[in-house]
Image 1: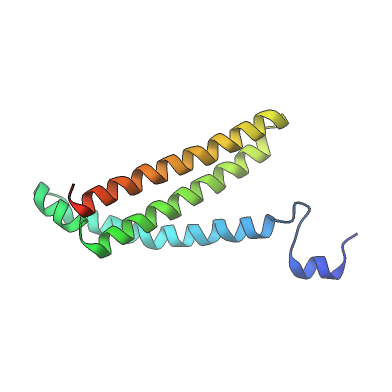
Image 2 (image 1 turned 30 degrees about the vertical axis):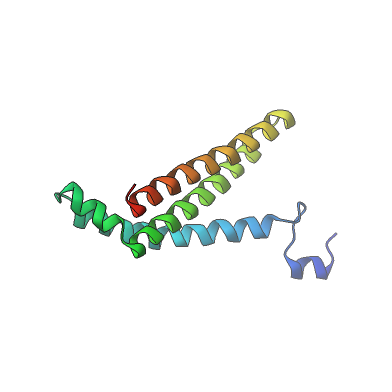
Length: 124
């Protein structure tokens, strides 16, 4: 039986389902905007010289958009895989191990991608 207060707070049995739901929707909305902008940038760079591409990608606004896209996509990827692991892996030990690996993988992809953007941005 649920109390009216628990219905108002929106907390489920795990006490974090609503936050997870909204974070996944927020990153999905951010991904739509950021990826449309980045696809537009890539389309404008098709056929350009290597120097022109590097000069465009090293602009501060483009670099910030790239880093924002990497962060948003990595968070969204981790959340989506977390749901799949929690729903389809029934062994508690395997579930914990896979959730840890999922987090490490998302962090690894995110950090390597941000490092690459920063290397291009600072020209090293």
